[in-house]
Image (cartoon, rainbow, N blue to C red; front, side):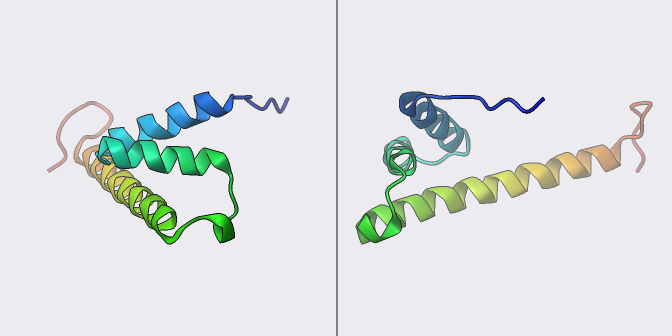
Length: 87
């Protein structure tokens, strides 16, 4: 069964804001980027500043996500299933 979660525009905006702030994107930038992302406005209609804000916020989020994934992988490899260090 394939169910799709329906979120309002406001809920989507809050979700984007939360994820960006959790990735240490400055709050003001996260709010602005989230608002632009949920607007679903074509790139051609966005200002250069809007595009830059979204790119910076998303790149920062991606860097933090990669860092988190790397740390998780290292921790998994450092401990075997019994919880003992494998160094």
